[in-house]
Length: 285
Length: 337
Image 1: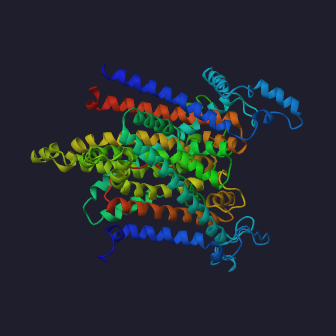
Image 2: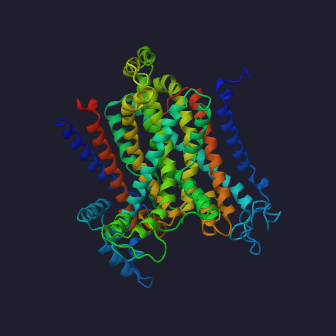
Image 3: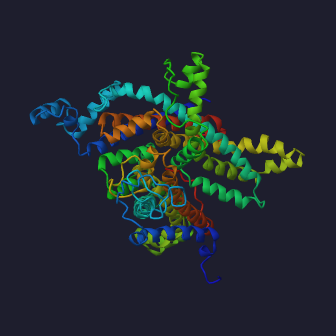
């Protein structure tokens, strides 16, 4: 164990990574794991309960939805959308937020003021409202969901990282680097980024959880990927209509979202503790 | 007190400027929309020429900034246009739904505040004991559940499995809601209809609990960490040396100082919580502004989306400005400037 880097010896990091990796593997190997095509309808066996319940069918381990589609298969395929959005959207938000935060914190002055005020304007939109409005403007589809999340959530990175950059920029070794003749670019990439990286990694992990939730919310109100792509939020919206006939259909996607978000949060929390970074309480979606 | 008034005035001015930028942004995003509001407001039998006339009437052939200025002028005069889908004035739709949303948000904020403070005190109480890791883990689990999942989970548990509480709408069928202020809870009390008040409250328990509980962990964590900070201060040690009881130290000395950052966070949280009402309303079919917004989004009903989006921003900015002003009044340290 002693050869492992410190961050891998934290229980939280291991648990978080295990959950996230498991879901990522499920997403990657979805076609091999799913017992049915997620869109295949069986109109004679709709709203079946899970196999272990009375009236369950072993062919549909977690039952079927209102169109007789296999719940388990849809959950497995839903992981693809959730993970794609989580990874791509949070990296996108991170890149925009981090670049602006470093520029603002390093150069200060009018640039800092401008970026700060832009963040203020963004933050006066409730995130859910802004993402809904963006989806109306952009239109539905996976690419636009990701774009909407990036456009809404870059401020989370910018706000927190900027104050960190501000602190690091005042350190002696940064001044020394400038004195030695490092360019601004080289000072930022070689001296400042390594110091802000732990915070950055932690924030990305937390943002992935947020992105999963936002995608679920958008697909719940029918403003995410199209109807032919199974997504967890969509399954919830469908199950909400048949809540008395089949409460299980509501339970499973809730559980899937919860476990995924929990994985990212535990990982983020573990990284925060082991990498010893101060994260101000981040706001949720 | 005199020195903080200019600060507050400045803060209000900044909010107004932000609001103008926000409204311009909102306007531009919605103009990206690939649907034609003119065509949508006409009957399906309209000819292309008729639609062109309508486009001209609606000012859609003008440059974008002219269109924005016209819209902003109308909004300032209280004219929010009329809904394409509902064929009603948008202002009327908003005034009939906003009170419900405010009631939900306020009730949820009370839940969040109470749970947050009680939970924060508990987290602080168990610090350094064997129960700390358990409490810590529990608070991460709580943080992982957004209001959206709490709402659905409560429907499954209290609504469907235990059948304890209603989970659709605001009132049971058969009640004729009074309308005086538009706030259902206040109106039922004003007219003395206690039975209806209780029914309305029953309908609000699950949505308010779901929303409140989702926002409580952040409050818990901040209260705990500010209490830990305050306990490092000299005046706590002094109070202890003077023989003040631990309970009295907590209530009179520590909590009094730790509550300020907590209250300020709760103010910020209230802004976010107000945005969170949208999903809760949809889940509980609660007739507020959130449901209006989602319906409008599904029907691409531009006038509603624009105005409701703006209303959300106005409310959030108002809350944030009020919280900042309150913070200035409550915190003597910030008055020097």
